[in-house]
Figure 1 (tube, rainbow, N blue to C red):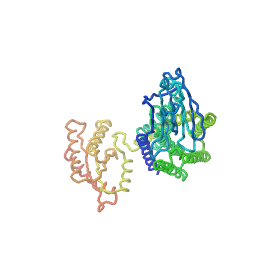
Figure 2 (figure 1 turned 90 degrees about the vertical axis):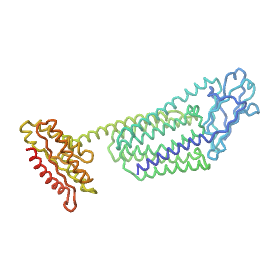
Figure 3 (figure 1 turned 90 degrees about the horizontal axis):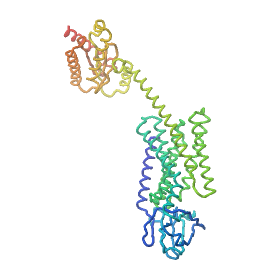
Figure 4 (figure 1 turned 30 degrees about the vertical axis):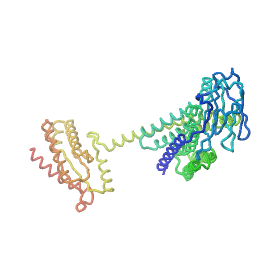
Length: 533
C-alpha cells in the first residue's frame, strides 16, 4: 500500500505544481498606471496604513525635495488598490476576471514619483479581496537602491533558510533515489527528503525576495498552499519508518484524509467557489489531526519500547521545533509580522535529522555489504570463484519447488587430477582446477550456473533449449581443452562431461536426472582415457 500511495502522492504533487504554473501564466492581475512609467524594483521607508474592516486609506503629500529620484513601492497581499493623485487614478491593481481566482495574490507594485507629483496628495485606497480579513499592504517610499537593500536585508534570513532547506532536501532526494539501493533506509530518506523540499519551497514561495523577482502573483499563493498541504504525509511516513512503527489504521486514515483535503480544496478553487486562502481552515484541521497522530505515535512508541538514541534525538528536535514555532506565534501576536524563528527551527530539524538519517543509512549499507560478502563467501568456492556445493543444493531445492520448464544438469570430472597432484604438487593441481573452471565458465556462464561440487567434480544447471545446443556446448568444451593442450599444459587436460534433461517419465526428482548425467559422464571419462592413453 505504501509504495502505491507514495506514487499517487508524487503524481498529485506534480499535477498541483503544473496547475500552479498554469494559473500563473493565465491569471494576471489587472494593472493600470498613468503615463506608462517604467516599473522599478523597490523603495525604502515603510508607510503605516490605518485599517477599518476590509478597507484602508493612506495618503501623503510629498514635497519637491522628497520626490526627487524616489519611488513608491508597496506589497499587496490579497488586496486590491487604487492610487490617486488628488482625484485622478494614477495606478490600480485589481484581481483578474477569471472565475478560478478571487485574489490578487502576493504582488509588488512600483510607482515612479515624477516631479509634477510634488505638492499633490497621493492616496492609497486599499480593499481586501476577502470579506473575512483586513487588507494587507507594506509600503516604501524613497531611493530605489536603498529600498532594494532594505528588502533584501530584511528578508534575506528567511530566503536563505528556504534555499538551504530545498538544497538539503534535493541532495537527500538524489542520495535516496540514485545512491542507496532498495532498502528500508532508502524509503526513510526518500520521505524525509520530499518533506524537506516541500517545506523549503513553501517558505521560498512566501518570501518577499521571491515575490519581488518572480512576479507570479497568484501562483505564489498556489505554491505555498500546495506545499503546506503536501508536507504532512511524507513527514508522517518518515516518522513511521524511522521508529519502526507498524502500520496502524490511524496512519492510513490520515494519508487518505489529507489526500481528500487536497482534492477538495483544489476542486473548490478550480470551480471558483472558494479560493485556497478561504479554505485554509480545512488544512488547519488536517494539520491539527496530523500533530495529534505524530505525538500519539511517538508517545506510544516510547512507552512500548526502550528509548533509543534515534528516539531521543527526534524528541529533542521536535521540542526545539515547537519552541521556535511558539516564538513565531508570539512574535506574530505582538507585532502582527512574520518572523524567521520557525524557519530556523525547521532548518535545524532538517539538518540534524538529515545527518542522523544519512548516518543510519550508511551503517545499514555497510552492514548490507558485509552481509553480501559473507553470503558470497558462504556460496562461493574460494579456489575457482564458482558457486560451491551449498549453493548447488540450495538452487536444486529452489528449482524443484518452482519448476516450470525442463532443467538440464551437466556433470564434469577432471581426468588425471590425482596424478597431477602427486607428480607436480598441489599448486599444479590447483592450476589444473582453476583452468578447467575457467573453460567451463566460458562455455556455460551465458545461460547457466556453474558449480564446483567436489575436489575434481563440477556441475552446471541450465534451462533446456535443444539437444543440438547442449551437444554443441559439450563439443566446444572439448575443443577448448585441446587448444589449451596445444599451448602446453602440466598434464594433458581432459574434462569428462555428461548431461541429462529432466524427464517426468524417468525422474522423480533432479537427483535422478543428475544420476543419469553421472552415468553419461563416466562413459565419456572412459572414452577420453582410452583416447589419451
